[in-house]
Image 1 (spheres, rainbow, N blue to C red):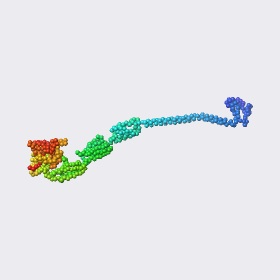
Image 2: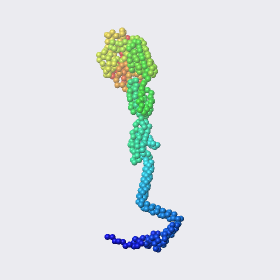
Image 3: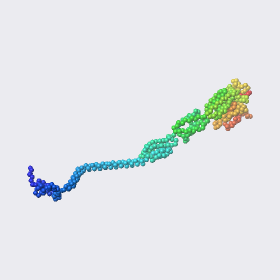
Image 4: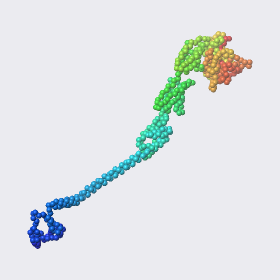
Length: 527
């Protein structure tokens, strides 16, 4: 239920503050214009009144109005700004914080980048200062090693190598270059171990158009090799070589050549033989040089050692012809021999008889075992071969054979009238031995001792065409001394320059002497 308010005349009963009295705190009734105790309002023309300290209203002129308005505007602006500032202050702080955070983040990033740059520069510096080590050796030792600009000899250690890709080059005289690409690091040494170098080498093929050619090859260092042609040699060290070839007793002058690396060299060793062609009229003659039978005419010898060659051409009953031939290197020489018919003949027992100008015949050879056995019916020889001279015969056995041979040939119709077979006298033996060469005789000489007789005809014939008048076996003769000993001439297979100094040397023996050194030769003499 409402109560009626108490009416207070002239006021509402609420406290009021006099307008225009700033901060007075006093209250009073609001008076109407013209009320008792009030002043009349100013006229139109009066200045406006304002409140002032003490409650008086002073009139304000128009000139004073503008500063007051301006000040009021400024105060309003400041109040508005303050209100705006306090209204939006949190947002400003947020923006400022975000900006500061961004600045801090940028600084942190810059600091990190600077740290990374410093770390990169430090790592780069360490990398530039880092060095790798390479250790190696070689077989053979002492090889030259090159790594970049560094040079050493094996065994070698390189301590100042920049890490990364490097090339190792090893070189040695006579060996192929060794090259290796590798990547090295500074964390641990790189040990290549012992590198075995490959020797520079080539191959050599040796041939010859001749047979039985031997050779000696010498080369770098102590290299030496002996062999027979043809031959192939592999992996010869490179360098200069010298080869000396020989065939039998012929040795060529050394040949010098060079083997290059990985070369397949070929060398032909050719002896500059001469060619010899011999024909005879009639053909079929035996051609000899010294003890050696070269063949029968017509004869072609494509390989004859150059030089002077003494030959004999023999075809019974023709006279033996002798030739002296000079053979130039790699040249061809031809000779034609016309044989002369003489009184030589072949006996029925197969014995060759040669005419001697003094009027008798002499056996071309010492009596052979085949001839002795044909006539005598037995063979007393110790060294049994048909073409060797009969030995182990006494003087008595030899003279008995001559008698049987005379009968044998007479019976066969081959004995010349008024002649008979006998042992030669010493003058006859001296004549028929003629110009026999003691150096060609079948004897023990030059440090070589023969161990038996040899086939007849091994030595060169003398001017009559008789063989082995010196050497092979001693020959019984008719000569006798006052003690009844018979002479032996010519020497035998065991004779030497010490016991048989010349063709005049003679021995004497009793007629019954039998040994392996004694045989005989027959002559066909007038009755």
